[in-house]
Length: 91
Image (cartoon, rainbow, N blue to C red; front, side, top):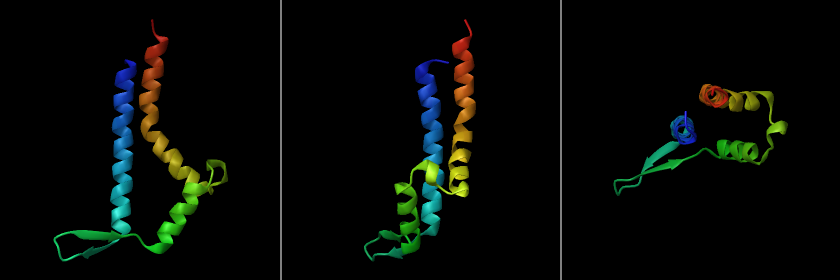
């Protein structure tokens, strides 16, 4: 696997991770029609506070549950990295 192929595969997984997050985020929002054919999404204040706190917290200070969530995301990309590492060690 070339470096560019690695980048593409990792980018694909990153997009999938982002898409899962966005679907989750939207599922937590209140949706209001604005009368002009648009929807407005409102994130509950409690979630904004929680996510801001998590974003401002270094990984080592996260709760074990929050760390596990990050580990679960890494598990999606680890097979790609292993495959690339194996291809790098072969002549």
